[in-house]
Amino acid sequence: MYLRAPVKAVHSKKDTHGVGSLTQGPSVPNPPKFRPGLIINQNWTLTIMYYHDTTTPKEVVEQAYDHIAEWYLGWVEGPGQRSSPRERYANKVLENAAPASSSSSSPMRVLELGCGPGVPITRMLLDRGAQVVANDISTRQLGMARARCPQATLVAGDMAALSFEPASFDGVVSFFTIFHLPRAEQKGMLAKIHSWLRPGGMFVFNLATVDEEEIHGEFLGHGMFWSSYGVEDSKAMVRDVGLEVVEAEVLEAGEGQLEESDPDYGVKFMWVAARKGV
Image 1 (cartoon, helix red, strand yellow):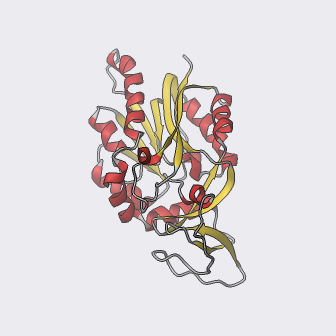
Image 2 (cartoon, helix red, strand yellow):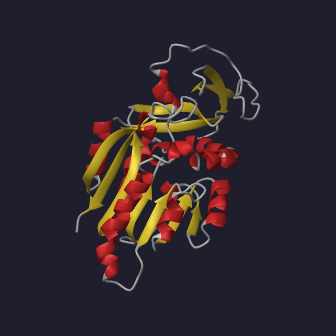
């Protein structure tokens, strides 16, 4: 799903410092057993948010997407996301799988990692005739996807813990998701995806462009975690697991036309289409 504030922080000239919880987030106490994390919010203000020492990055992500589920749905269906390249990239999977599926009696089978509330991608894939298995770490997001996409097979939990038979899918789609994994786990995740793809299958996804091992930021009023390699190291990681990079491009969100209040304002992502060899 999303990386935002860490990119803005480099250029911020209006930063101030304060201590407390986020405006829309829950009130969090600050006894010694809590550790601070730097938050850069959408108003360009630095805030210290406190995380319990036992809260893992994945728990932060899960709790955040549970908490912001309704806000996230409204945002993802809003005008700022209509210019997102994700539908164009998802279409690459469908076009790549079409020749094989046309010669088979079975529909193309697509895995979506980080499906969120089921829109726009899960629904798009289903509307195009794909058999979809969709995963999300947030049970609230997955419940919303179930209501909107009842034909999909929905699987809750950490994507890194998923297990499928080799060559199970014609394509894999994962937008705004991989960078929520600690980057030490990202190569292993890509290796799993490579094994799940059928020969010639395509994987489309996006990654952040900053080289940061641990990033704590704010998204829609809640603390969030991201982790990322830089652009060239990310491309190398994709190749190292045996995938061919068919296309990779760095694009500013919203084609540079977003309102400053949008969480994606001024943020760049690397969009990738990669294929497994035949």
